Length: 272
Image 1 (cartoon, rainbow, N blue to C red):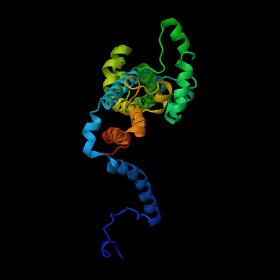
Image 2 (image 1 turned 60 degrees about the vertical axis):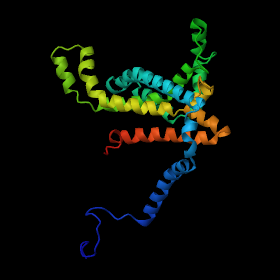
Image 3 (image 1 turned 90 degrees about the vertical axis):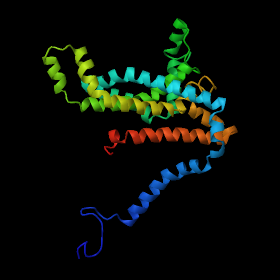
């Protein structure tokens, strides 16, 4: 019997979903939806404005913006040449180098914070020299929070840019070189405009990751209000004394993350 005769409306070529698979998929969706629903249901909406307008929250929000934007700037300045190196230069052990660059993505953030302490602490490999030569101390400072966020978030920018560089049509760059343009001019006038969408999406994704960073920041920079206490750290502190404020701040971070993912879905998933 044809699908028309049996009254079925399933599109032609679409396989029927087995019930066990459908049940497992529903449980998978519930695993993501229920915790978010819990935040929405338990949020103290009646006091939301007063809680978010408190001086402590305003300070944490301002500091989060400063640190995350600073980390994004550092990631762009350092990550663009690094992505170029990985995508365009045949360097020895390039696979190992790429693995090292991507390591913070899978590394436990607390371990990243410990590694930063051993490298940039007062007795660290580089921190000892910075302190002795310039009097620069990074741990437990705002600059330290920026460094921790850069360490964790920059791989996302490098990953986005390396993929874009590999997929770039090089014929325009070759044509510019044939016409006598210098490498710097080719990069500035041809390559960068072609990379603009990837630059924007990579920077936004990097910023969102920096904004939500917790483990490396609290380990390397500490949790000092007004100096290193960003929004994720403020959530951690508020849950002990002011759970309502912690829930509201969690919702703020949730909405930011959701907006970034929805806005960049065409870049990462190829959907509209």
